[in-house]
Image 1 (tube, rainbow, N blue to C red):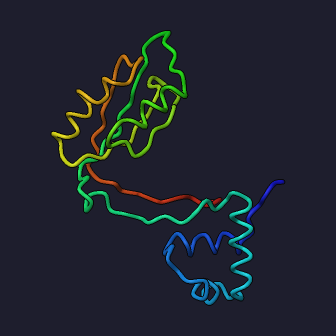
Image 2: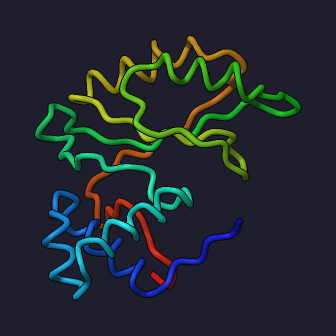
Image 3: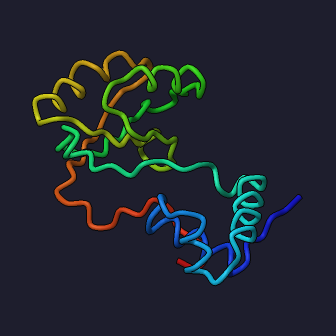
Amino acid sequence: MAFTPDEVDLALLRALRADGRRSITGLADELDLSRSAVHTRLDVLRDAGALLGFAPVVDPARLGAGVTAFVLLSAGPGARLETEPLRAQLLGLPHVEYAALVTGEADVLLLVRAADLAQLRTFLLEDLRTVSGLRGTLTLLVLDEVIDRPFLLPGE
């Protein structure tokens, strides 16, 4: 069954994005809804798979990961990366926050967070060697995270 959020659902998600620790009462007051209406809306969002859960938002630098890089991995001409073995190998790597198969000249995009440049260097020169089928990498060091949204809503 298809789910299409309405403006109240989107307002509820915006309020949670701003502060995921808001109480049901606080959300109800802000959105001019009853507490039971907020509960119902949250249940519908969860049941529809639109709201997957509640997670803390952390500052990686304050947790010891002050260096961020995007690393593009390439399998090389004619090579084929098998998704499930690749997923298992990437999950075994330290410092990888996000990984995706991508189109273009690269095959995989990694978001890597490390304590310092020495740790990033070890990741690039040693840890990545455990991933089979790779022929090249391109590392983009992040100087400043200009926009960092936990999620986007329709129209944003």
